[in-house]
Image (cartoon, rainbow, N blue to C red; front, side):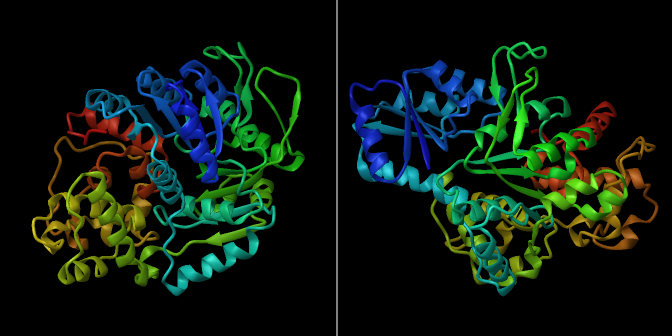
Length: 460
């Protein structure tokens, strides 16, 4: 992994760096936040940043967020300064590490980052076959298209392929094509020069260059605007990019992985995705099974999430009761692993018994959760031209049955489905959009319509 150390901590910074190097990390050092942000903007990637607690961590977090650079920050300080630690966490740091550095603690922090990015559970035969295919093709440089329903773990498998490849020592860079506005996605991928457009206050290295020597993941590639797909195709074919505002060609050595939760052949037929780009990306396809098709993995995943959230929330770790296990295994979740993760997060917080009881496990009873990904209700969600016609929000009785939908307009059913899903995803817009199978822009537009109509929308 790549570790960035920011600041001068009375000589302890060198000790922390040496410990990290001994544990196999690649270490770079920056004097202050300005230098650190500049390095990240110019392609000096990092999987983790250890920052002096005396530096303006909040400023660094904001600058990284503005530039859509995702690097977890761990604050470091001399001794156990509780006030400084709390302030750093409030500013956006994930953890506080006291110095002088303890070798085991530094190793634990590094290991936690690696495990968070690469944890894979595959006890079920359906998932074992996926990993066997991934193991066979990982050592090559072939472009891979990873498909599957929303929440099935496509990014996890992408990281697995990277770690098993000959590029594992290089960077792994992920770009969510659905979460970045259209007018910024080109800059995100290919970079830009200073002054090339309003707001371009300095040169920015694109993700293709940042991933040089490693792997670039194009997450939800079908959300990419059609006009940008031609430039992406050329970059993949010619192995070169041109930054916005520049005429200079930059050669790249980057392996491409792409994911989608949509039927790409249908998208090609509908003119939403270029056919030549589809064939360029689909050298090898890995199709991930839905969680309902890998039942042997449900309980190991549920317990993994229960342990994870117990630690994060500072509560006692608990096993899942037998009754709770039955409840989890009998539920056909539409949101797959992501929905299971959210379910266990709530269960950990709600549980009051020595073991997580079934009453703490809240499962959605909406019509949406009862349908398969190809069902009629999912088709309703993808309809983006429906307008609001009802002034009140009707309550659907017996929402699991078709009879509960009788008498409701399509707009009513769609609205309830979207709001229920957003609530189920704890207000996370990106997760909800993926579960619903619509773009983040479509979701935001619909939520704005609901707000304007006086309907309460779950907070982000």
